Length: 325
Ligand SMILES: Cc1cc2nc3c(=O)[nH]c(=O)nc-3n(C[C@H](O)[C@H](O)[C@H](O)COP(=O)(O)O)c2cc1C
Image 1 (tube, rainbow, N blue to C red):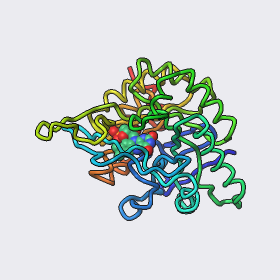
Image 2: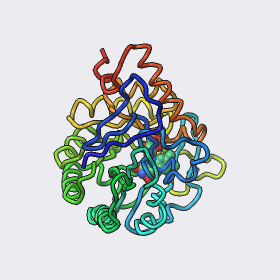
Image 3: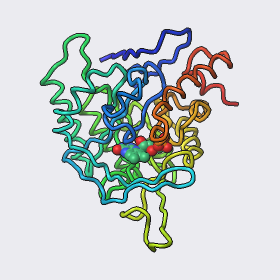
């Protein structure tokens, strides 16, 4: 498998392409899991085919209702969510969401979550089995260009982040998933750990093709009149501008600890934010929370990266990480 994904970005003299395993993304800008659904709600607002990659909402083995409301609260520099991986489950994903994803021209990365190692494996096996059964004609897209394994969700009792804090579990899980797919495998890590580089090295040892860095940071807001936490489950995951320095620092550390590409995520709202991640060593980036206030953010960020590369006479986006003094 050596899949070149094309986008509708006009051809330019710069090389914006990014390689993740065997997959070549047309540019480094993706939309982060959970902030873009499976793409369908944003069709009117965003030119999705001009993106580098669409990372879907998490897919689990069984449907999940998610956590009780309220599950979102704003903070001065971000958002705390406790969605709890609400999703229709892998069967409905395959029937209802995949046909639309197959029409996308950007890379489509399926975010996978589970409560146990077996559950992650079962989701991958079900998707791979389905893809083999339906087959793809030449030129037809499978709708699955890779998997992003969410071992970092702070909003579930079992699985999620409890995997992401243990290098032994991460290596074993990655190795088990590696045996089930030839498609790129991206491990999405939590910043809520003592040393994220240890976890990244374990994912690399298990056969991961890339690391997404980072998921949300555990946070809490308390309503001082109602005398209870502002979200029903108590704490949740903080995202948005407040976590950008955490994500940049984690990207810097992880990109120096592993040979595989790092995908930077956390608090990106402007091109300058994205370039900080690229300078820190990321090969690609994702944008999440900023999409809620401005759905055009990914396009503006991509335009800004191109402008910055021209101003700094950089021809290849993959070289930006070499420029940090
Ligand atoms: C409402 C919401 C839902 C999310 N759902 C998922 C998810 O299903 N899987 C996942 O790996 N990350 C999920 N995330 C985390 C984001 O993909 C991203 O890692 C995080 O929000 C940091 O990026 P940002 O500051 O640009 O939002 C979610 C984030 C938000 C705000």
